[in-house]
Length: 46
Image (cartoon, rainbow, N blue to C red; front, top):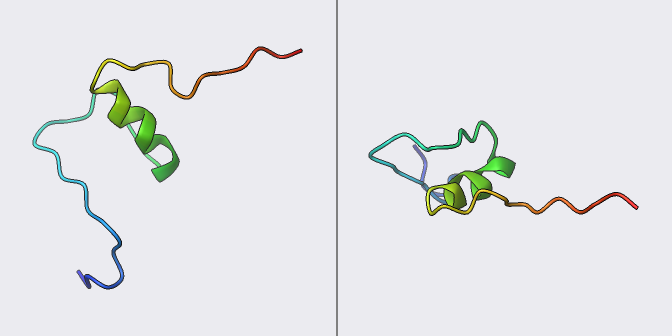
């Protein structure tokens, strides 16, 4: 892997509780590891 082309690497020794098939879903998956399951909060429609 060319280190200049990869801005960061996330390694885990176990599977995530919530799958993160895309980068956009990674934050929610990481927070789920710490028991925060309602991210991102969904606002009520007016």
